Image (cartoon, rainbow, N blue to C red; front, side, top):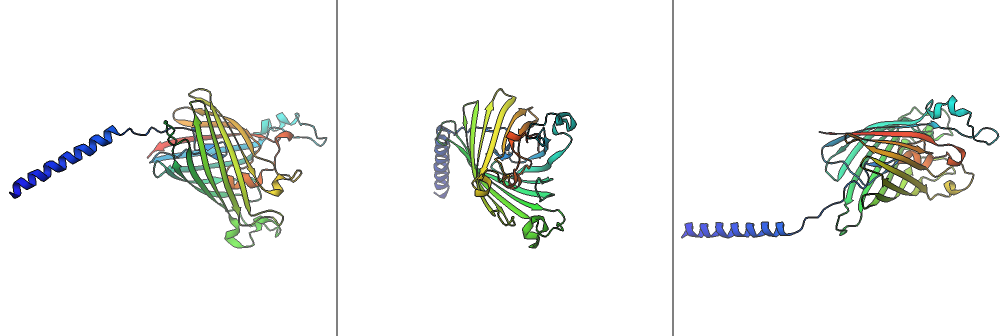
Length: 306
């Protein structure tokens, strides 16, 4: 009897497993929308994209000097075009680093940039987690991710006691943080749009500045063909000082071209931002497109499956 009971239990278990398997097969699988943006960044702004699990991404970014500016008379200085060779004679910022996909939805990275403000020799630790993924049936209409950056200046302290680079409070005054919520949608095969509300916190600022900067980024992409895309991004800080005319601060705006070669992503852009990471360019953009203060930049991203 025990033998028969065992056989019956095995048969019942097998039938139940088969029923569950058939139910799973009958249930339609969700199809997700991929490559809302081709890269993990849109010029300067982080995108909703994350690296696949086990992919190591090596990145090099460069921002050259202004193509041309204005002379003492306030006119555009076209004569300086050849002298500085379209800004290639000087580098506003240089960055390189690696990022790694721990899971398909979570990635971390480490970067080093020159820095574009008083704080130089910047180390950046960044992380991004994809919260939501857009589906083709629109049951989830958007993709959403959270991106955070911790920046530390490793430069020697300035001898000027009035400078934020003097670091009077020690190591803590070297640190800057940013956190952004990224929400994007791909409209068909051609157009993508993203908004990026966020905050930047600096532990030490000038006496008339604010530690906390609430900001909003807007980014878009037009995919011309399989290889070429046109990208644009901007980020505005809702801060009285930065919104006051004549304060010397300006809204960072970039426009560029993105090339997908299959092996790597290559971007070339024009931007008035000297910095590369949000902890640098959001607080410190003081260059004006209207005054010819924009520069050529590029980013090369190459992924390796580990």
